[in-house]
Length: 105
Image (cartoon, rainbow, N blue to C red; front, side, top):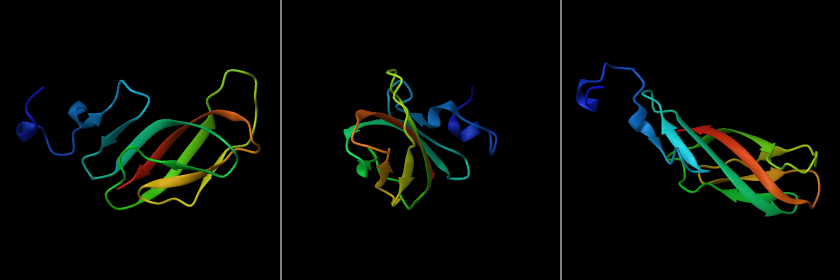
């Protein structure tokens, strides 16, 4: 694979991924769209989750899901999106892990 300077315009470059081997990471697409993923561990409904690194401008969407293996089922939702954080609702006060995928710029 060539250097970034010789990479054809619009072609995906794996060097745009940061933290790919961690629970948290991100990738910047050629058009500037950023995808972030990660895990939040907490207790309480309506918890605030802060991104390890904020989006430069805005977060457009966050998709969340339960990451537990204990047969706990609950509805999960994200709201109050900002460039730096979002809030989680997961239907109760159960302590657990929530995984997310966020898209922004």
